[in-house]
Amino acid sequence: MKKILFVCTGNTCRSPMAQALFMKYLSTYSKHEAYEVISAGIFAHAGNPVSLETSLLLQKEEGIDLSSHQSQCIDTDMVQGADLILTMTREHKNFIINQYPLPDGKEIHTLSEYVGQNHEDIIDPIGGGLESYRECLQQMRGLIHMLVKKIMEFDK
Image (cartoon, rainbow, N blue to C red; front, side, top):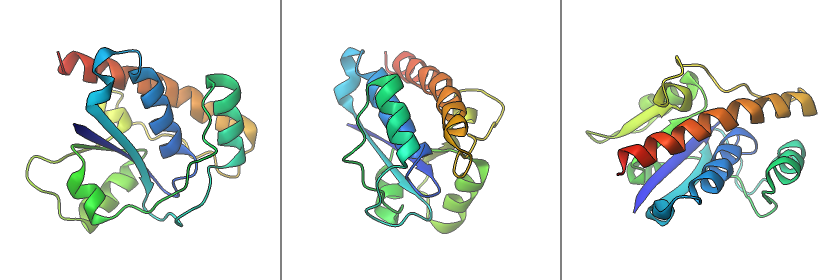
């Protein structure tokens, strides 16, 4: 089983959104059971739910229920156990590289760089209102579709 770890700051918006979209889009492929997908935040407070805006948008626009999500802070075991770490920003990526020992061959990228989108950071919707969350979701959808396609092509 391959483990993918999505990372953002607080694990209440972007990384749970990426995890949920990835699992939904991946489920249409026969090899979807070969992946374990988790999310975490570099400064997360354990046990927080997703933001209200994230929950509302994913439920309304994607039919995804994230009511059971509880945030978690990234730790050494997560970093060591993941086959692929995908961060929402370059800052998240640099933080992990500087804070955790990465074994040889460990893959860590921003989500956008991994799918070939010029190192574009995923916008942080916190404090921006529902439209900021919708913009983040739109950006995330495109990147996650590219990610699933890339992984499925790679896994042939």
